[in-house]
Length: 319
Image 1: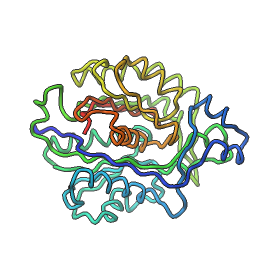
Image 2 (image 1 turned 45 degrees about the horizontal axis):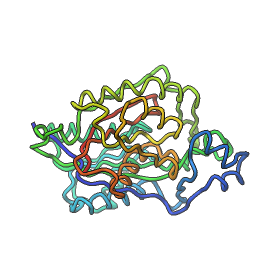
Image 3 (image 1 turned 90 degrees about the vertical axis):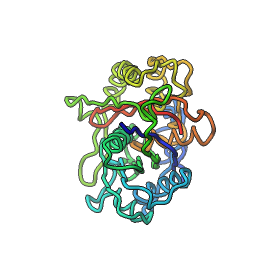
């Protein structure tokens, strides 16, 4: 059976940076309060002339350039996002148009914070089934558009951005020493806790039950993440990097520790970028690769969690 692999990455963030001191001038908060509770120092915020599909297209173009491919080479575009205000055209269709693609299949996937790892699994399955050969998988969210900028408990968390991966068919992937380019996904949800993270109303606004999410993430997710490694045929000690959804440093650090990835680089892009929802994992991974912190071919755990109280993870080989 044909496998698949991530061959290139790209990321993009708006130029405007919002610091904790900037937020302290807007709501009753402070740099110390934000840093001690969530570990975030800055976040990027797009303007009204920077829609989600523009962020996604910039990241996608960088990933294509890194892969040495033309837009016409792509036959599947998946965009994971929960901040697409318009229902049609989809973000994926708009990205395909912006990049001048030929006639790819286009699909948006809304699983909020775990959207990218869900979309990556869909791309892998589609390629394995022979329905596509080259996919552009993007996580893009403009959380600033749905932030309640009067609520100091949530607005301090959020940022805007996009990350992208080019995924290609790889006939040798199933027999590659150390496992396939994209390992088996482990995904699921906790439906009875779905309201713990919400984007609701008109206009839509982000809200969450922070303590419930924290307790669930730090207690329930580590054993699930270890099972992801087991499905990939490796141990947590084998991991070269762990890229969790960049929600909150107080979640990332204990979860990574409990997974047991003692030799891994832990992505902490949340400090500079805030919570960018579906963009957070591909953006953090792209930055690690750009800085040369993970060797090509090394095993990396990707694990998304959040909205819908959903989760999805897989081990990939670093491009």
